Every structure is written in C-alpha cells, then in structure tokens.
Image 1 (cartoon, one colour):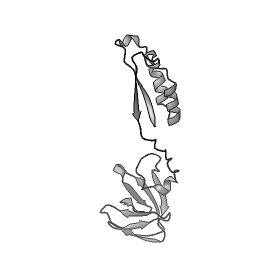
Image 2 (spheres, rainbow, N blue to C red):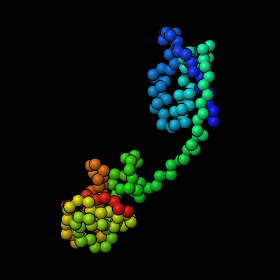
Image 3 (spheres, rainbow, N blue to C red):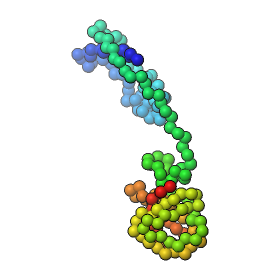
Image 4 (tube, helix red, strand yellow):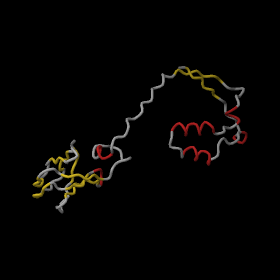
Length: 166
C-alpha cells in the first residue's frame, strides 16, 4: 500500500502560524476511553493554517508500507473468580474468593497441595505448617502484597501463603 506524505516547509517565524487546537480540546479527546471515538475526536480538531493549506515549497514523498495487520479482538472475559490466581494484570481482578475444602482436612506443611470445592488447586508456598482436624472447612483466599495470596481457613488462626497450581 502506498501512502503519500506531504512534507511542508515550516515558516521561518512561529508567529505566522496560528495555534491548532486548544489544551481543553486536547484534554477532551485524551479523556475518551474508546479508541475509535478518541481518534475521531483528534481528527476533528482544527489544524493551523500553515499545515492545512498546501505550501508552494511542498514536496511529495512516496513511502511503501507493509499491509495493515488485522485487529484481533480479545477473548471475552470469563468469570473473574474462575481466573483468580492465574491472571497477570491487575485490571478487573477479584480481590478474594470463598470456597471450602471438601472432606476432612488435617492441615498442611510446605508444598502441600489443597483442592478446593470449586476445582482450583493451590499449593502452600511458605514454610508454615499446622495440624488441624476439620470437616469441610470454609476457606478464603485473598490477595496480599507483591502478588502473593493468603489462605484463610475457618477454625484456624494460621494463614499460609499459597500459589495457584490449577
């Protein structure tokens, strides 16, 4: 695809070229979150007379550009609780999940894997250990500092750090 770019010689005096768009107009366009609407807003801004009118000393430059890459829309967002612990960015993330450990739970030590009723598997990632004898305990996994997660178990004062395996 060939695109012709119009190269204009700038005026020697900046006073001869009127201002293009005001700061308020630029801020209004910048505030739009939709990409297409933002581009349309910028395209509608007035440009200076020196840039809009072709100059006598204009030269035409031809440039060969590669074909445009088709835009691939992101996959629809799944349930945030189903992705909890696997996502990388902080946008639209759940801050905690609540589930329970089915059956009897006898505690943990470093590296213990715990399967929750929702199908998620979490592994103890610190060196903590505890001996508990609980039946179907409710658990809450919440976000902590530095991208880590804390497992809070109903009936226990200990809260080990965990990482999601599956």
